[in-house]
Image (cartoon, rainbow, N blue to C red; front, top):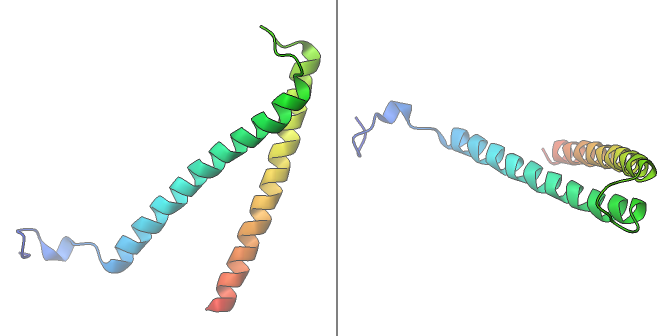
Length: 95
């Protein structure tokens, strides 16, 4: 039995703690990036496609927003994949 009454054999190792911490950081980063993506899409696409907001979208506005969002998300994904790939290469070079 451990010092505080727990089973010391079940205590997470420092590597386990590090892994859990890194997973939490990745999740928080993903949430922050998703928020940033939504903000940028709104900033770029909405302003570009809907010059005078009304109570409804007309078909041209819907089409414009849809296409703009697709292009922006495609570009975002390309940049993200490239960044991740570069970071992985640099991390391998450090090891």
